[in-house]
Length: 111
Image (cartoon, helix red, strand yellow):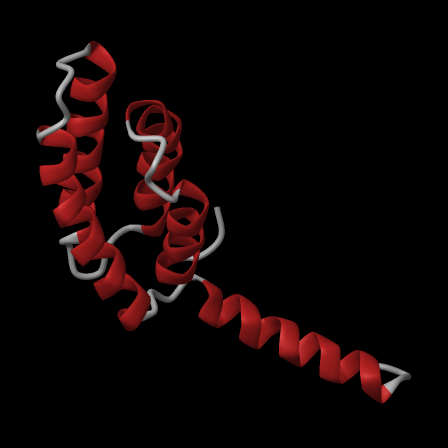
């Protein structure tokens, strides 16, 4: 038994945080799914057909496909997002990548 009751509270709290951190949060997940489906069309309509645009398109479609699973795999979502984000920033600098990164974290856990 811990000598200090605050240590016990912290440990219990940490366990609860760890248990809930990787659980998809439905509201954030739904918001992310909706935004990324719209973003597919935005990327598709990009005026310049470049290799970067094509890569962003297929990486985005891959991520949307993973997010459609019930439940989505947190490691796969995170991996796909980490590969998509830099290309997306290059193709569409107006897309709020930092905000989307936060939404991915809220949806499936830490990056």
